[in-house]
Amino acid sequence: MSVFAVFYLTVFLLVLFAPREDKLNRGFIPCTKQLAEEIFSCAENKTWCMSKAIVKNTWCDTLVVLDGFGAWVRGRQETPWANYLFTPEPLDAAQNEPDAALTEFYAENPDIAGDMEKLHQDRQKLEQDIKAATEQDLAGKNKAAESLKAEIEALAAGDVKSTENEKESQDE
Image (cartoon, rainbow, N blue to C red; front, side):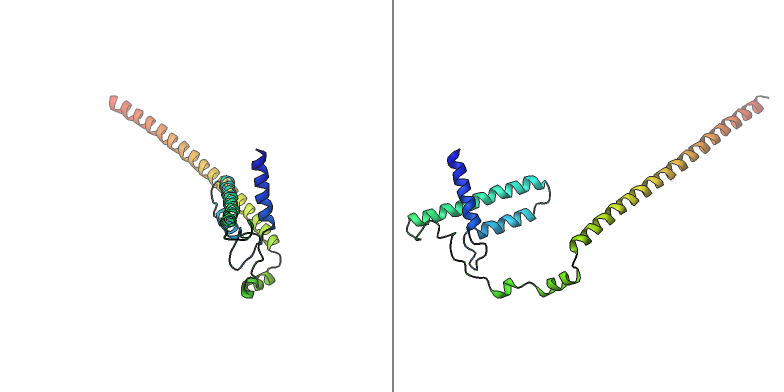
């Protein structure tokens, strides 16, 4: 168990100190991108889905470390860590610059978190209003149903009396 824990901690530290951006997408970068895609695609049962994605990412990172060790043993690289601890090639300047439309959007909407909170409060108020209107509508329908039931019972009682009166007049 200790060997497993030390190996896991070692992989964790290697991922922590590895480059996060590289023009050639080397090292742990593809694993991290795959993790992000899987986490964002979780729609149902999010906790279980995210846990599976994290375990899958850990396995991917472990394979990167083992591939580096194997390449070193075969003589294809100078050190076991050369495939994930390297000097990254910078991304193109166009990729590092934020999108002009996005920058304009943030300039026009400086308090996005506040706006989202207001939307959340408005949604809750709307849900309460809909619930109250539905309950009021249901109460009105129940009242109308009771009124109709009373009228039907009154009419039925009137029909019974008229039927009895007809029988009495036929008997005479």
